[in-house]
Length: 137
Image (tube, rainbow, N blue to C red):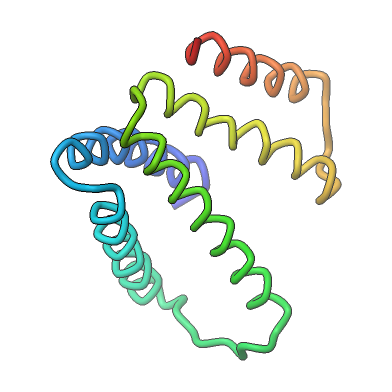
């Protein structure tokens, strides 16, 4: 499956994930829903990696494992913050603000990873930021 199909699958699943999380948070605490959702994610991701033959246990001292752990710490912060915000705020405000990770990620790709930037890409990033502000306010 090419990256566009994977991205479309992710977009669709994320859209429904926000909905289901908000509904679950109406009757359960943040710190009950979060481990259930994240545990399901871990099992699902491991299953998919195994099915695709891409699951391996790398050396824990390797540089890529360090970056994977750093990514996990960042994901934990994102998930905790997102669940806490969603448990108290409206989906129509929380999700767009959370979605600013798209702008942040694009900027980090350009600044840190040296990915190319065109006028079209810069305009898209700016429009993304403006869209979030308009939706969330």
